[in-house]
Length: 256
Image 1 (cartoon, rainbow, N blue to C red):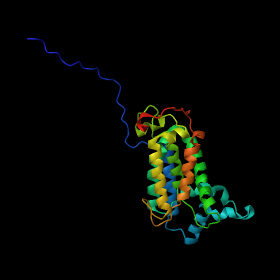
Image 2 (image 1 turned 180 degrees about the vertical axis):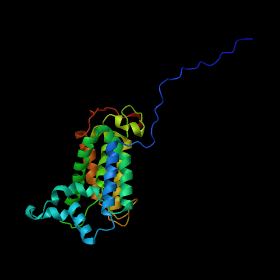
Image 3 (image 1 turned 90 degrees about the vertical axis):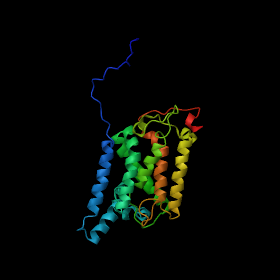
Image 4 (image 1 turned 60 degrees about the vertical axis):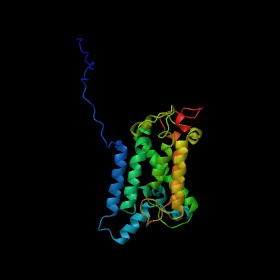
C-alpha cells in the first residue's frame, strides 16, 4: 500500500497577531468629537439664563448682518465667529448627525494630511462655508451654527482620493488614505465620484426646497454653507495633501 501523503504544514508565525480594532479613529478626530460634545454640554447647562444664552449665541455664532456693518461697529466677534459657529449645535439630532458624518469622512482625510493640517483645514473650510452663506444672505440677522459646512468640505476632499484607486482596485475604507490623489479633472472622469457628487447635490437641492432627508427637520438647514464647504474641500484639497498627485491618461477599469 502506498504511503499516504500528508498535507504540508506551514510553520507558525511566532510573532503575536495584531488585533485590528473595530472602532479606530485618529486622535485628532476623537479630539474634534470631544470638543463638539463638551461645547454642546456647556451650552445646555440648566442654570444658564436666557440672557446668558442669547449672549453666548450672539458672541460665537456666525451672523451675516455683522459683516454688513462698518468695521468700527462690528466689535471683535467678526474675528472668531467664522470658526466658532462650527462648534455649536442646536440640538441632539444636530450634533449626532454631524458627528456620525464626521467620523466617516474626517477619518481618512485626517490619516492622510495629519493632525496639524486637519486643524488648519477645519478653520479655513469653516470660514469658506460661512462666507458662502453670507454672500447669499448678506445682511441677514439669522444665526449660523453647526459643523456641517466642515463635514461637507471633508466630503469634497475625500472625492479626490478616497473613492477610486488608480489601478482599478478598491482599498478598504480604513486604507483609503493610501490612494494617490486624483487631479480635479480625473476626479470628474470617475463615474464613482461623479455619481456621489450628483447624489450629494441632489440631497442639498431638496434641502434648499425645504425637504430634509436626515437630521433635525425642525430647524432650517444652511444648504449654501454646505456647497461652500464642499467646493473648498474638492477644489483646494491639494494645498493640504502631503502626497503628490498622479495624472491618469486612461480611466480606471471600474469607471468603464
